[in-house]
Length: 205
Image (cartoon, rainbow, N blue to C red):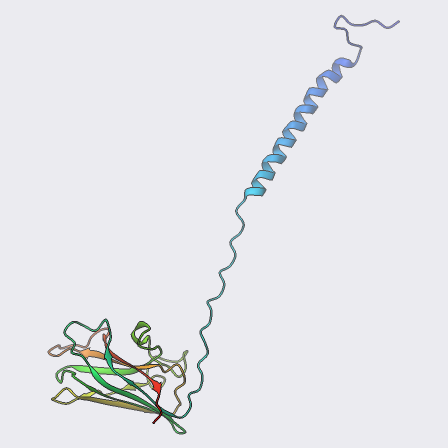
């Protein structure tokens, strides 16, 4: 007959008792590690998506031949002391190109002014930036329409004009008069402030 040990276990059962706790401990460690890794994977911040490209504005369209006119009015950011500027800007589109002119009043004969065709209506950023035939071209004539020189007579009446062989498109929205050099100054303004703006709208005449 086989004999029992004093502990009441059969021979060989001591090894199983010692191995079982180690096995259970190993399983618990593995499960805990899996839970931890799963938690990290579940709550890891997703990779940021690339920003969408900026929306393109409406493409410029050709303008019909004819006259486009507007009346000048001072912009809100005109320098203090600027007199109310009145007058008219006119753009003529024809088979031979574009002609733009202005006639304005109440400018200072002792100051120097510049004027350009701009790419926005007067209500948007006071005319926005300069109109360009080629938006990727240089910021100067003949790619832009600069009305130079602006001639002012002793009574404050001003005239200016420019002619181009290209036809302006629908991006030609307004004409803006800038102060290039104040009366009595010895140097031009680094960034000539806007004084007055005229929207260009199709005229029935």
